[in-house]
Amino acid sequence: MCRQSAAVCLVKSPTRQQRCTADLAVRLRTLSDPRHRRGVRHPFVSVLLVACSAVISGARSFAAIGQWAKNAPQETLARLGARTTSVFGVRLAPSGATIRRLVNRTCPGGLADLLGCDPADADSLAVDGKSARGSRTDDSPAAHLLAAITDTGQAVTQLRVPDKTNEITCFAALLEPYDLAGVVVTADALHTQRDHARYLGEKSAHYAFTVKRNQPNLYAQLKALPWKEARARFYDRSTGHGRLETRVVQVLTVTDLGVDFPHAAQVARIVRHRTDRKTGRRSRETVCVLTDLTSRQASPQRIAQLIRAQWVIENRLHFVRDVTFAEDASKIRTGHGPDNMAALRSFAINPLRAAGHTNIAAALRDMSYEPFTRPLDLLKIS
Image 1 (cartoon, rainbow, N blue to C red):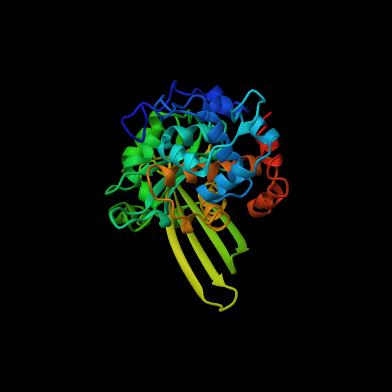
Image 2 (image 1 turned 135 degrees about the horizontal axis):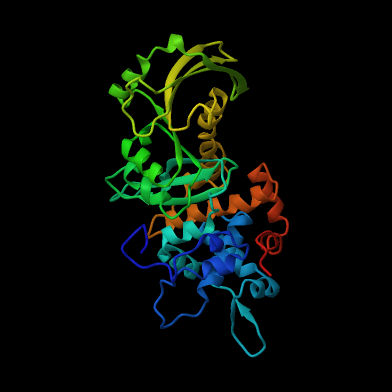
């Protein structure tokens, strides 16, 4: 059953081996074709491969994907498995309308799972949500998507948060299909929930959750701990985004401190001192961090690295989709269109980053110079 709805969207539940296979077509065949058998002209997997290739070459909309397909040469269409229309083997590309209808109806949960990477060997996994602002209509709010990304910048999966709920209700469902043994899951203060900690414990995973003033009782309890007695400390300084930031990390072992949080082993206090390099304005922020990692598993420096790893999902996924793919300006609103286009954009980032590209915008320009060969070569579509 699909995590996104009550429909059966997968012909067979994908295994880790299937998720990790380099053959994209093999992975996509696991999905169920949402169309009725009658009147089907274009192969389901072929249409999805067209969409994947077009987005990697820089397409931002269904119209752009359809235009890419319309101009694709016969050799490219043959590699993508496009429909043959005559005895002469002439390939016919799907129209923009066909691509739009199919992507709008394809199961978003299954597509995101099959297009993402497997996090089993990751050091840490960051979870955070983002709204596709352009998908808002008069009758419904913008699609809000909860996503997960590894510390190396590889998107894992995403899940649309149902209307009138929040990200908390989707946390367990997002991570359920994956083996997270030994992986440290990080999240912002919204997900500092006892149920989340228990769930990760059941999956043999670890957590590092930020505690802020949105949980006043827990925050006050942690703030009142004997921080002057903390001997484990770490100092760090960095520059970026036009500011100078100094971080002081203090760590206490939870033993006999009366901290009421499942599996908690250590608590850290991070004091951030920021100075704006243009105006000279200074600010100070104090946050606390709860983790089930012991002092042997995580030093103060390690905890600081885990908390900073949470920003990977903002800098290397959400920011890229917003700025490079103009996601917030996209007017795709109907069906599963917002979810699946976001999944295609996240998927496009993965092979580009795996190929060594650090600037995704520059990588897309590189793909656009030979849009009908380089994307297929990158995806190893023969």
